[in-house]
Amino acid sequence: MFSTKRRRGWWTPLAIGLAASAVLTTGGAAAAPSSKPKSPPKLPSEAQQVPPTDCTAPVGIDANAVLPGYLVPDDTLGITCVPFTQVPLEPAGYQGDYRVDAFSDQVLRDMLATCEAAPPCSAITNAQSYNPPQFRLTGSLVPQGKIDPHATNVNLNDIRRPGFFGQAPYHEGIAAADKDSYTFEFAVPAEPYERLKRGITAPVKLRGWYLKGAGVQQPNGRRVQSLAIFVGGRSVETTTVQDPRDPLYVRSESTGRFENVTYPSRGTEQWAGRNWRQYLYKLNQAGFDVLTFDKRGHGISGGISGDNILQQGLDMLRAIDALDTGDGVRIVGANGRQLTGKAATRALVPNNMNKLPIILGGPSQGSAATQWAMNANFNRWCELDTPERACHKPWGHNVKGAVLMAGFPVVNPSLAEAARRKVNYTVGLGGTSEPLAGIGSWPAVFFGKGLFDGIQGPFPTFNAYLRAQGDKELLFVRGPHSEVAFGPGNVALMQERVAQFAVRAVLGQKTNQPRYQTLKEAVAASPQIWEPSTQPTFETKP
Image 1: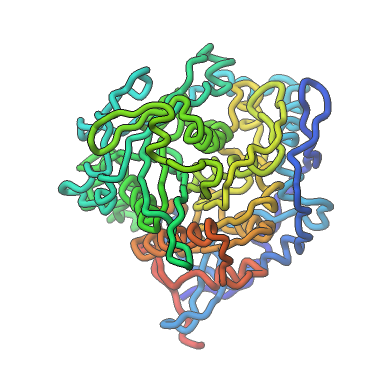
Image 2 (image 1 turned 90 degrees about the horizontal axis):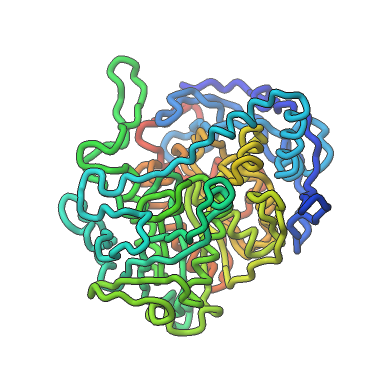
Protein backbone atom coordinates (compact mmCIF):
# COMPACT_ATOMS: atom_id res chain seq x y z
CA MET A 1 0.00 0.00 0.00
CA PHE A 2 1.23 3.50 -0.69
CA SER A 3 1.16 6.65 1.36
CA THR A 4 -1.25 9.39 0.32
CA LYS A 5 0.54 12.17 2.17
CA ARG A 6 0.80 15.36 0.15
CA ARG A 7 4.37 16.30 -0.63
CA ARG A 8 4.51 19.94 -1.65
CA GLY A 9 7.76 20.36 0.25
CA TRP A 10 9.48 17.88 -2.04
CA TRP A 11 9.26 20.47 -4.79
CA THR A 12 11.07 23.21 -2.91
CA PRO A 13 13.43 24.54 -5.60
CA LEU A 14 17.14 24.88 -5.19
CA ALA A 15 18.22 28.47 -4.77
CA ILE A 16 20.39 29.26 -7.76
CA GLY A 17 21.71 32.76 -7.54
CA LEU A 18 22.68 33.13 -11.16
CA ALA A 19 22.61 36.11 -13.45
CA ALA A 20 19.90 35.61 -16.05
CA SER A 21 21.53 36.57 -19.30
CA ALA A 22 21.20 34.93 -22.70
CA VAL A 23 23.68 37.21 -24.52
CA LEU A 24 26.49 35.46 -26.37
CA THR A 25 29.76 37.06 -27.32
CA THR A 26 31.63 36.75 -30.57
CA GLY A 27 35.23 37.91 -30.56
CA GLY A 28 34.61 40.11 -27.52
CA ALA A 29 31.64 41.94 -29.06
CA ALA A 30 27.99 41.42 -28.19
CA ALA A 31 26.08 39.03 -30.43
CA ALA A 32 22.37 38.31 -30.51
CA PRO A 33 21.17 34.98 -29.12
CA SER A 34 19.45 32.41 -31.34
CA SER A 35 16.43 34.02 -32.97
CA LYS A 36 12.93 32.96 -32.01
CA PRO A 37 10.61 33.36 -35.03
CA LYS A 38 7.59 32.69 -32.82
CA SER A 39 7.15 34.39 -29.49
CA PRO A 40 7.21 31.82 -26.69
CA PRO A 41 3.81 31.17 -25.12
CA LYS A 42 3.10 32.70 -21.76
CA LEU A 43 3.36 29.71 -19.47
CA PRO A 44 1.78 29.32 -16.06
CA SER A 45 4.22 29.28 -13.17
CA GLU A 46 6.02 25.98 -12.68
CA ALA A 47 4.11 25.50 -9.43
CA GLN A 48 0.91 25.67 -11.48
CA GLN A 49 2.28 23.31 -14.12
CA VAL A 50 3.09 20.75 -11.39
CA PRO A 51 0.27 20.10 -8.89
CA PRO A 52 1.45 18.76 -5.52
CA THR A 53 2.07 15.02 -5.41
CA ASP A 54 -0.36 13.02 -3.26
CA CYS A 55 1.13 9.54 -2.83
CA THR A 56 4.31 7.50 -2.80
CA ALA A 57 5.12 4.12 -4.33
CA PRO A 58 8.22 1.96 -4.94
CA VAL A 59 9.93 1.58 -8.32
CA GLY A 60 12.47 -1.00 -9.46
CA ILE A 61 15.19 -0.54 -12.06
CA ASP A 62 17.12 1.80 -12.00
CA ALA A 63 16.06 3.73 -8.89
CA ASN A 64 15.22 0.90 -6.46
CA ALA A 65 13.49 3.54 -4.37
CA VAL A 66 10.19 4.94 -3.18
CA LEU A 67 9.16 7.98 -5.24
CA PRO A 68 6.36 10.52 -4.87
CA GLY A 69 3.61 10.41 -7.43
CA TYR A 70 -0.02 11.01 -8.32
CA LEU A 71 -3.13 8.98 -7.56
CA VAL A 72 -4.76 8.17 -10.90
CA PRO A 73 -7.64 5.94 -12.08
CA ASP A 74 -6.76 2.42 -13.16
CA ASP A 75 -8.98 0.07 -15.18
CA THR A 76 -8.04 -2.94 -13.07
CA LEU A 77 -6.98 -1.57 -9.70
CA GLY A 78 -9.48 1.25 -9.31
CA ILE A 79 -6.89 3.78 -8.22
CA THR A 80 -3.12 3.44 -8.33
CA CYS A 81 -0.16 5.61 -7.44
CA VAL A 82 2.01 6.47 -10.44
CA PRO A 83 5.38 7.65 -9.10
CA PHE A 84 7.93 9.71 -10.97
CA THR A 85 11.36 11.28 -10.51
CA GLN A 86 11.24 14.81 -9.12
CA VAL A 87 13.28 17.87 -10.12
CA PRO A 88 13.46 21.30 -8.42
CA LEU A 89 11.08 23.91 -9.75
CA GLU A 90 11.75 27.57 -10.35
CA PRO A 91 12.33 29.65 -7.20
CA ALA A 92 9.16 31.24 -5.84
CA GLY A 93 8.57 34.66 -7.37
CA TYR A 94 11.21 34.17 -10.11
CA GLN A 95 10.97 36.96 -12.67
CA GLY A 96 11.68 35.87 -16.23
CA ASP A 97 11.78 32.61 -18.13
CA TYR A 98 13.56 30.37 -15.63
CA ARG A 99 14.27 27.33 -17.86
CA VAL A 100 15.77 29.57 -20.55
CA ASP A 101 17.36 32.40 -18.56
CA ALA A 102 18.96 30.42 -15.74
CA PHE A 103 20.27 27.56 -17.90
CA SER A 104 21.94 29.38 -20.79
CA ASP A 105 25.49 29.13 -22.10
CA GLN A 106 26.14 32.65 -20.87
CA VAL A 107 25.14 31.69 -17.33
CA LEU A 108 27.75 28.93 -17.49
CA ARG A 109 30.38 31.39 -18.67
CA ASP A 110 29.50 33.84 -15.92
CA MET A 111 29.75 31.11 -13.28
CA LEU A 112 33.17 30.13 -14.57
CA ALA A 113 34.38 33.73 -14.66
CA THR A 114 33.43 34.10 -10.99
CA CYS A 115 35.33 30.91 -10.18
CA GLU A 116 38.42 32.04 -12.08
CA ALA A 117 38.35 35.43 -10.34
CA ALA A 118 39.06 33.69 -7.02
CA PRO A 119 41.73 31.07 -7.84
CA PRO A 120 42.36 28.25 -7.64
CA CYS A 121 39.37 27.23 -9.76
CA SER A 122 39.25 23.44 -9.57
CA ALA A 123 36.86 23.21 -12.54
CA ILE A 124 39.60 24.59 -14.81
CA THR A 125 42.18 22.23 -13.35
CA ASN A 126 39.91 19.24 -13.83
CA ALA A 127 39.09 20.23 -17.40
CA GLN A 128 42.78 20.36 -18.25
CA SER A 129 43.02 16.62 -17.56
CA TYR A 130 40.00 15.81 -19.72
CA ASN A 131 40.20 12.45 -21.49
CA PRO A 132 37.30 12.14 -23.94
CA PRO A 133 35.46 8.80 -23.95
CA GLN A 134 35.09 6.46 -26.89
CA PHE A 135 32.57 3.61 -27.00
CA ARG A 136 33.91 0.66 -28.99
CA LEU A 137 32.18 -2.64 -28.20
CA THR A 138 31.39 -3.73 -31.76
CA GLY A 139 33.32 -6.94 -32.39
CA SER A 140 34.29 -7.43 -28.75
CA LEU A 141 32.61 -10.86 -28.64
CA VAL A 142 31.89 -11.75 -32.27
CA PRO A 143 34.85 -11.02 -34.59
CA GLN A 144 32.79 -10.59 -37.75
CA GLY A 145 32.06 -6.91 -38.13
CA LYS A 146 35.01 -5.58 -36.16
CA ILE A 147 36.83 -2.78 -38.00
CA ASP A 148 39.32 -0.03 -37.26
CA PRO A 149 36.94 2.96 -37.13
CA HIS A 150 39.81 5.43 -37.51
CA ALA A 151 41.13 3.89 -40.73
CA THR A 152 41.12 6.13 -43.78
CA ASN A 153 39.73 3.48 -46.11
CA VAL A 154 37.51 1.00 -44.28
CA ASN A 155 36.22 -1.88 -46.39
CA LEU A 156 32.51 -1.28 -45.99
CA ASN A 157 31.83 -4.94 -46.76
CA ASP A 158 33.43 -5.78 -43.40
CA ILE A 159 30.66 -3.98 -41.48
CA ARG A 160 27.73 -6.02 -40.19
CA ARG A 161 24.64 -5.50 -42.32
CA PRO A 162 21.00 -5.86 -41.25
CA GLY A 163 20.95 -9.39 -42.65
CA PHE A 164 23.64 -10.43 -40.17
CA PHE A 165 21.09 -10.10 -37.38
CA GLY A 166 18.71 -12.59 -38.96
CA GLN A 167 20.86 -15.55 -37.91
CA ALA A 168 20.56 -17.47 -34.66
CA PRO A 169 20.38 -16.53 -31.87
CA TYR A 170 19.38 -12.99 -32.89
CA HIS A 171 16.48 -13.50 -35.34
CA GLU A 172 15.87 -9.74 -35.56
CA GLY A 173 13.16 -8.33 -37.79
CA ILE A 174 15.49 -5.77 -39.35
CA ALA A 175 17.18 -8.58 -41.28
CA ALA A 176 14.21 -8.44 -43.67
CA ALA A 177 15.37 -4.97 -44.78
CA ASP A 178 18.78 -6.21 -45.91
CA LYS A 179 18.05 -6.44 -49.64
CA ASP A 180 17.13 -2.75 -49.75
CA SER A 181 19.85 -1.57 -47.37
CA TYR A 182 23.25 0.05 -47.77
CA THR A 183 26.23 0.41 -45.54
CA PHE A 184 26.71 4.18 -45.49
CA GLU A 185 29.74 6.40 -44.85
CA PHE A 186 30.11 10.16 -45.03
CA ALA A 187 32.72 12.67 -43.91
CA VAL A 188 32.35 15.50 -41.41
CA PRO A 189 34.88 18.11 -40.22
CA ALA A 190 37.12 17.45 -37.23
CA GLU A 191 35.44 18.90 -34.16
CA PRO A 192 36.95 21.86 -32.25
CA TYR A 193 38.50 19.67 -29.52
CA GLU A 194 40.33 17.63 -32.16
CA ARG A 195 41.53 20.70 -34.04
CA LEU A 196 42.35 23.09 -31.21
CA LYS A 197 43.58 20.66 -28.52
CA ARG A 198 44.95 17.73 -30.48
CA GLY A 199 45.98 19.26 -33.81
CA ILE A 200 43.80 16.83 -35.78
CA THR A 201 42.40 18.36 -38.95
CA ALA A 202 41.52 15.29 -41.06
CA PRO A 203 37.81 14.76 -41.67
CA VAL A 204 36.01 12.25 -39.48
CA LYS A 205 34.27 9.32 -41.18
CA LEU A 206 30.82 8.46 -39.78
CA ARG A 207 29.33 5.09 -40.68
CA GLY A 208 26.02 3.31 -40.38
CA TRP A 209 23.11 2.12 -42.51
CA TYR A 210 20.74 3.55 -45.07
CA LEU A 211 17.54 1.48 -45.26
CA LYS A 212 15.48 2.19 -48.37
CA GLY A 213 11.74 2.36 -47.72
CA ALA A 214 8.64 1.96 -49.86
CA GLY A 215 7.63 5.58 -49.28
CA VAL A 216 5.12 6.98 -46.82
CA GLN A 217 1.59 6.39 -48.04
CA GLN A 218 -0.56 9.46 -48.59
CA PRO A 219 -4.36 9.47 -48.15
CA ASN A 220 -4.75 9.13 -51.95
CA GLY A 221 -2.70 5.92 -51.88
CA ARG A 222 0.38 7.39 -53.54
CA ARG A 223 3.68 7.05 -51.72
CA VAL A 224 6.19 9.81 -51.10
CA GLN A 225 9.86 9.16 -50.42
CA SER A 226 10.59 10.37 -46.88
CA LEU A 227 13.70 10.20 -44.72
CA ALA A 228 14.14 9.57 -41.01
CA ILE A 229 17.62 10.35 -39.63
CA PHE A 230 17.94 8.75 -36.20
CA VAL A 231 20.98 8.42 -33.95
CA GLY A 232 21.27 6.34 -30.80
CA GLY A 233 21.86 7.22 -27.19
CA ARG A 234 25.16 7.55 -25.38
CA SER A 235 27.33 4.45 -25.87
CA VAL A 236 24.81 2.86 -28.28
CA GLU A 237 26.38 1.33 -31.38
CA THR A 238 24.43 0.39 -34.50
CA THR A 239 25.97 -3.04 -35.03
CA THR A 240 26.67 -4.54 -31.59
CA VAL A 241 25.23 -8.01 -31.01
CA GLN A 242 22.66 -8.78 -28.33
CA ASP A 243 21.60 -12.30 -27.49
CA PRO A 244 17.85 -12.09 -26.70
CA ARG A 245 18.32 -14.67 -23.93
CA ASP A 246 20.56 -12.33 -21.93
CA PRO A 247 18.83 -10.24 -19.22
CA LEU A 248 18.99 -6.51 -18.73
CA TYR A 249 19.06 -6.90 -14.95
CA VAL A 250 18.95 -9.45 -12.15
CA ARG A 251 17.57 -9.21 -8.63
CA SER A 252 20.05 -9.47 -5.78
CA GLU A 253 19.16 -12.27 -3.39
CA SER A 254 20.82 -10.45 -0.51
CA THR A 255 19.40 -6.94 -0.97
CA GLY A 256 16.34 -7.46 -3.15
CA ARG A 257 17.55 -4.63 -5.40
CA PHE A 258 17.45 -4.87 -9.17
CA GLU A 259 20.96 -4.61 -10.62
CA ASN A 260 21.96 -4.08 -14.24
CA VAL A 261 24.04 -6.85 -15.80
CA THR A 262 27.39 -5.64 -17.10
CA TYR A 263 28.14 -6.25 -20.78
CA PRO A 264 30.00 -7.37 -22.90
CA SER A 265 29.53 -10.84 -21.47
CA ARG A 266 27.61 -14.02 -22.23
CA GLY A 267 26.49 -13.61 -25.86
CA THR A 268 25.90 -9.86 -25.76
CA GLU A 269 28.31 -7.06 -26.64
CA GLN A 270 25.86 -4.36 -25.60
CA TRP A 271 22.36 -4.60 -24.16
CA ALA A 272 20.67 -1.94 -26.29
CA GLY A 273 21.33 -2.71 -29.94
CA ARG A 274 18.48 -5.13 -30.47
CA ASN A 275 15.62 -2.85 -29.42
CA TRP A 276 17.30 0.19 -30.97
CA ARG A 277 17.42 -1.57 -34.35
CA GLN A 278 13.74 -2.42 -33.94
CA TYR A 279 12.94 1.31 -33.67
CA LEU A 280 14.73 1.80 -36.98
CA TYR A 281 12.95 -1.13 -38.61
CA LYS A 282 9.57 0.13 -37.41
CA LEU A 283 10.17 3.43 -39.21
CA ASN A 284 11.32 1.54 -42.31
CA GLN A 285 8.14 -0.57 -42.25
CA ALA A 286 6.14 2.67 -42.12
CA GLY A 287 7.66 3.54 -45.50
CA PHE A 288 10.61 5.69 -44.46
CA ASP A 289 14.10 5.61 -45.80
CA VAL A 290 16.08 5.40 -42.56
CA LEU A 291 19.59 6.75 -42.13
CA THR A 292 21.34 5.88 -38.90
CA PHE A 293 25.01 6.22 -38.06
CA ASP A 294 27.18 5.79 -35.04
CA LYS A 295 27.95 9.16 -33.50
CA ARG A 296 31.52 10.46 -33.26
CA GLY A 297 33.56 8.35 -30.88
CA HIS A 298 31.08 5.46 -31.11
CA GLY A 299 31.20 2.02 -32.67
CA ILE A 300 32.12 1.92 -36.35
CA SER A 301 32.48 5.72 -36.72
CA GLY A 302 35.67 7.70 -36.35
CA GLY A 303 36.36 10.56 -33.98
CA ILE A 304 38.18 10.55 -30.67
CA SER A 305 35.38 11.95 -28.51
CA GLY A 306 31.85 10.71 -27.85
CA ASP A 307 30.94 13.85 -25.89
CA ASN A 308 30.19 16.83 -28.14
CA ILE A 309 26.41 16.85 -28.59
CA LEU A 310 26.44 20.12 -30.54
CA GLN A 311 28.68 18.59 -33.20
CA GLN A 312 26.65 15.38 -33.14
CA GLY A 313 23.56 17.45 -33.86
CA LEU A 314 25.25 19.33 -36.68
CA ASP A 315 26.35 15.97 -38.10
CA MET A 316 22.67 15.12 -38.63
CA LEU A 317 22.35 18.22 -40.80
CA ARG A 318 25.68 17.47 -42.50
CA ALA A 319 24.28 14.06 -43.44
CA ILE A 320 21.50 15.86 -45.33
CA ASP A 321 24.10 18.00 -47.08
CA ALA A 322 26.07 14.88 -48.01
CA LEU A 323 22.98 13.22 -49.49
CA ASP A 324 22.49 16.34 -51.60
CA THR A 325 26.05 16.82 -52.86
CA GLY A 326 27.54 13.34 -52.60
CA ASP A 327 30.70 14.82 -51.09
CA GLY A 328 32.52 12.23 -48.99
CA VAL A 329 29.80 9.60 -49.40
CA ARG A 330 30.45 5.88 -49.93
CA ILE A 331 27.82 3.16 -49.92
CA VAL A 332 27.76 -0.61 -50.36
CA GLY A 333 24.53 -2.43 -51.15
CA ALA A 334 23.47 -6.04 -50.75
CA ASN A 335 25.35 -6.91 -53.94
CA GLY A 336 28.64 -5.87 -52.31
CA ARG A 337 29.32 -3.20 -54.94
CA GLN A 338 30.62 0.19 -53.78
CA LEU A 339 29.32 3.50 -55.09
CA THR A 340 30.81 6.90 -54.24
CA GLY A 341 29.90 10.54 -54.50
CA LYS A 342 26.92 11.64 -56.56
CA ALA A 343 26.43 8.14 -57.99
CA ALA A 344 25.95 6.88 -54.45
CA THR A 345 23.45 9.53 -53.42
CA ARG A 346 21.46 9.23 -56.65
CA ALA A 347 21.01 5.54 -55.89
CA LEU A 348 19.47 6.56 -52.56
CA VAL A 349 17.62 9.77 -53.47
CA PRO A 350 17.00 9.85 -57.22
CA ASN A 351 14.79 12.95 -57.10
CA ASN A 352 15.22 16.45 -55.66
CA MET A 353 16.84 16.15 -52.23
CA ASN A 354 15.57 19.60 -51.25
CA LYS A 355 11.97 18.39 -51.47
CA LEU A 356 12.50 15.23 -49.45
CA PRO A 357 10.56 15.51 -46.15
CA ILE A 358 12.79 14.65 -43.21
CA ILE A 359 12.32 13.62 -39.58
CA LEU A 360 15.18 13.85 -37.08
CA GLY A 361 15.28 11.89 -33.86
CA GLY A 362 16.96 9.81 -31.21
CA PRO A 363 16.97 8.81 -27.56
CA SER A 364 18.93 10.21 -24.61
CA GLN A 365 22.19 11.64 -26.01
CA GLY A 366 20.69 11.16 -29.48
CA SER A 367 17.76 13.27 -28.29
CA ALA A 368 20.15 15.97 -27.10
CA ALA A 369 21.91 15.91 -30.48
CA THR A 370 18.53 16.17 -32.21
CA GLN A 371 17.68 19.28 -30.16
CA TRP A 372 20.86 21.02 -31.30
CA ALA A 373 20.19 19.95 -34.90
CA MET A 374 16.64 21.32 -34.80
CA ASN A 375 17.84 24.57 -33.24
CA ALA A 376 20.51 25.02 -35.93
CA ASN A 377 18.06 24.17 -38.69
CA PHE A 378 15.33 26.61 -37.66
CA ASN A 379 17.06 29.38 -35.66
CA ARG A 380 20.12 31.55 -35.66
CA TRP A 381 22.67 29.41 -33.82
CA CYS A 382 26.13 29.86 -32.37
CA GLU A 383 29.30 27.77 -32.15
CA LEU A 384 29.31 27.39 -28.39
CA ASP A 385 32.27 25.01 -28.60
CA THR A 386 34.73 27.53 -30.08
CA PRO A 387 36.49 30.53 -28.50
CA GLU A 388 34.81 32.98 -30.90
CA ARG A 389 31.29 31.52 -30.57
CA ALA A 390 30.46 32.78 -34.05
CA CYS A 391 26.77 32.79 -34.91
CA HIS A 392 25.11 31.63 -38.12
CA LYS A 393 21.80 31.79 -39.93
CA PRO A 394 19.48 28.76 -39.83
CA TRP A 395 20.51 25.71 -41.84
CA GLY A 396 17.08 25.59 -43.47
CA HIS A 397 16.62 21.96 -44.52
CA ASN A 398 13.17 20.47 -45.21
CA VAL A 399 12.80 19.00 -41.72
CA LYS A 400 9.20 18.29 -40.77
CA GLY A 401 9.60 17.28 -37.15
CA ALA A 402 11.68 15.78 -34.36
CA VAL A 403 11.43 12.73 -32.12
CA LEU A 404 12.89 13.21 -28.64
CA MET A 405 12.99 10.08 -26.48
CA ALA A 406 14.50 9.94 -22.99
CA GLY A 407 15.51 13.55 -23.44
CA PHE A 408 16.72 16.18 -21.00
CA PRO A 409 15.90 19.67 -22.34
CA VAL A 410 18.19 21.51 -19.89
CA VAL A 411 20.50 20.44 -17.08
CA ASN A 412 21.44 22.43 -13.97
CA PRO A 413 24.35 24.77 -14.80
CA SER A 414 27.65 23.23 -13.76
CA LEU A 415 31.16 24.60 -13.49
CA ALA A 416 32.47 21.35 -14.94
CA GLU A 417 30.46 21.83 -18.13
CA ALA A 418 31.45 25.49 -18.31
CA ALA A 419 35.13 24.57 -18.01
CA ARG A 420 34.87 21.86 -20.66
CA ARG A 421 33.38 24.39 -23.06
CA LYS A 422 36.13 26.91 -22.44
CA VAL A 423 39.15 24.63 -22.04
CA ASN A 424 38.27 21.67 -24.27
CA TYR A 425 35.91 23.24 -26.81
CA THR A 426 33.18 20.68 -26.35
CA VAL A 427 29.46 20.98 -25.58
CA GLY A 428 28.66 18.05 -23.33
CA LEU A 429 25.57 16.53 -21.80
CA GLY A 430 25.32 19.41 -19.35
CA GLY A 431 22.98 20.87 -21.93
CA THR A 432 22.07 24.54 -21.97
CA SER A 433 18.82 26.22 -22.94
CA GLU A 434 19.47 27.51 -26.45
CA PRO A 435 17.50 24.71 -28.19
CA LEU A 436 14.68 25.04 -25.66
CA ALA A 437 14.48 28.78 -26.32
CA GLY A 438 13.84 28.09 -30.02
CA ILE A 439 11.53 25.09 -29.74
CA GLY A 440 8.54 27.21 -30.73
CA SER A 441 9.90 27.34 -34.29
CA TRP A 442 9.85 23.56 -34.79
CA PRO A 443 7.04 22.35 -37.07
CA ALA A 444 6.30 19.20 -35.04
CA VAL A 445 7.79 17.29 -32.10
CA PHE A 446 7.19 14.00 -30.30
CA PHE A 447 8.27 13.58 -26.68
CA GLY A 448 8.70 10.10 -25.20
CA LYS A 449 9.86 9.73 -21.61
CA GLY A 450 10.08 7.22 -18.77
CA LEU A 451 8.47 8.52 -15.58
CA PHE A 452 11.13 6.87 -13.41
CA ASP A 453 13.98 8.46 -15.41
CA GLY A 454 16.77 8.98 -12.90
CA ILE A 455 18.83 11.25 -15.16
CA GLN A 456 16.08 13.81 -15.33
CA GLY A 457 12.46 13.41 -14.35
CA PRO A 458 9.47 14.10 -16.60
CA PHE A 459 8.84 17.73 -15.69
CA PRO A 460 11.49 19.40 -17.93
CA THR A 461 10.13 17.36 -20.85
CA PHE A 462 6.59 18.44 -19.97
CA ASN A 463 7.73 22.06 -19.78
CA ALA A 464 9.29 21.74 -23.25
CA TYR A 465 6.04 20.19 -24.50
CA LEU A 466 4.10 23.26 -23.28
CA ARG A 467 6.51 25.53 -25.18
CA ALA A 468 6.23 23.71 -28.51
CA GLN A 469 3.88 25.58 -30.83
CA GLY A 470 3.82 23.22 -33.80
CA ASP A 471 2.05 19.89 -33.78
CA LYS A 472 3.11 17.93 -30.72
CA GLU A 473 2.65 14.65 -28.91
CA LEU A 474 3.69 13.46 -25.47
CA LEU A 475 3.95 9.89 -24.25
CA PHE A 476 5.03 9.18 -20.69
CA VAL A 477 5.56 5.51 -19.86
CA ARG A 478 5.92 3.79 -16.50
CA GLY A 479 9.56 2.88 -16.79
CA PRO A 480 13.16 4.12 -16.32
CA HIS A 481 15.43 6.31 -18.44
CA SER A 482 16.44 4.10 -21.36
CA GLU A 483 13.97 3.78 -24.21
CA VAL A 484 15.03 0.13 -24.65
CA ALA A 485 14.45 -0.70 -20.96
CA PHE A 486 10.79 0.28 -20.61
CA GLY A 487 9.67 -3.36 -20.69
CA PRO A 488 8.34 -5.16 -23.80
CA GLY A 489 4.87 -3.63 -23.75
CA ASN A 490 6.05 -0.04 -23.39
CA VAL A 491 8.88 -0.50 -25.91
CA ALA A 492 6.45 -1.83 -28.52
CA LEU A 493 4.03 1.02 -27.81
CA MET A 494 6.76 3.66 -28.04
CA GLN A 495 7.99 2.23 -31.34
CA GLU A 496 4.48 2.29 -32.75
CA ARG A 497 3.77 5.83 -31.58
CA VAL A 498 7.08 7.14 -32.92
CA ALA A 499 6.37 5.68 -36.36
CA GLN A 500 2.79 7.02 -36.39
CA PHE A 501 3.97 10.49 -35.42
CA ALA A 502 6.68 10.48 -38.10
CA VAL A 503 4.14 9.56 -40.78
CA ARG A 504 1.76 12.30 -39.70
CA ALA A 505 4.56 14.87 -39.56
CA VAL A 506 5.80 14.30 -43.12
CA LEU A 507 2.21 14.30 -44.42
CA GLY A 508 1.33 17.47 -42.52
CA GLN A 509 -1.42 15.74 -40.55
CA LYS A 510 -2.32 16.83 -37.03
CA THR A 511 -2.46 14.66 -33.96
CA ASN A 512 -5.75 14.00 -32.22
CA GLN A 513 -4.06 13.70 -28.83
CA PRO A 514 -5.63 15.99 -26.20
CA ARG A 515 -3.44 18.83 -24.98
CA TYR A 516 -2.26 18.36 -21.41
CA GLN A 517 -2.32 21.44 -19.18
CA THR A 518 -0.56 20.03 -16.11
CA LEU A 519 2.02 17.38 -15.39
CA LYS A 520 -0.60 15.43 -13.43
CA GLU A 521 -2.81 15.16 -16.52
CA ALA A 522 0.12 13.85 -18.57
CA VAL A 523 1.16 11.35 -15.88
CA ALA A 524 -2.42 10.13 -15.52
CA ALA A 525 -2.54 9.57 -19.30
CA SER A 526 0.48 7.25 -19.21
CA PRO A 527 -0.51 3.76 -20.45
CA GLN A 528 -1.27 1.22 -17.75
CA ILE A 529 1.80 -0.83 -18.66
CA TRP A 530 4.50 -1.16 -16.01
CA GLU A 531 8.17 -1.96 -16.53
CA PRO A 532 8.35 -5.51 -15.06
CA SER A 533 10.59 -4.73 -12.07
CA THR A 534 8.01 -2.20 -10.83
CA GLN A 535 4.69 -3.53 -9.58
CA PRO A 536 1.68 -1.20 -9.28
CA THR A 537 0.28 -0.41 -5.88
CA PHE A 538 -3.46 -0.08 -5.35
CA GLU A 539 -6.20 1.33 -3.18
CA THR A 540 -9.13 -0.85 -2.09
CA LYS A 541 -11.45 2.17 -2.30
CA PRO A 542 -12.33 3.64 -5.74
